[in-house]
Image 1 (cartoon, rainbow, N blue to C red):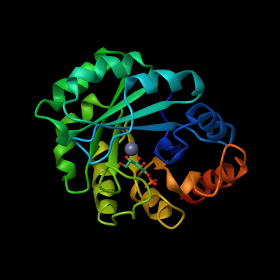
Image 2: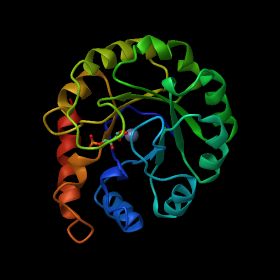
Image 3: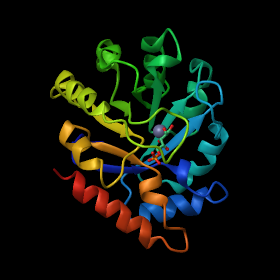
Length: 227
Ligand code: DX5
Ligand code: ZN
């Protein structure tokens, strides 16, 4: 897969119909989604529970683009193999989820997936400085993880700018996750992000029987992100 920093819209299925993931995924990809963001939550690292490796395995055949799995779980290590075997292209883990992040990221790559590191709004960007050579993606949380539809936390813009300088010309994506909407994505793109996770901003107003709304939401977001 070649690396480029052109804006990518990655709808999060956290905001999709949980009874209809296959059709929802086909709809967003037909309507222009670049990646599919898959939010795994364990009710321990974050105060919400979604689904696990089995659901990821079940939805994998419906994803034609990129399966971007975001693990909001702790501990991480016992589950890396299962998510890699489920077919995840990217597996992002939280730097806050445990003491041996360096080793966990190596294990993700060894399991055949592309490693990503995610950081919560309260975590300084320096926390990932020594991990950058192990990852293909840094996920900067725009909200406190656990739920869709929250407001973007503006202090994360400075963090993205610093991260962009830290990365330099290394082929590492900067993903923003949470609170991405038409009124926030421009400043986020300006700060240096290139992958934009959007749940609410893509799915609200649409459905599998009215997917054109997904398409217009995705195109509007991508247009604004082309700073
Ligand atoms: C939050 C998740 C985000 C969330 C984004 O814990 O990691 O991916 O689904 O949802 P919106 O775009 O609605 O803020
Ligand atoms: Zn996420």
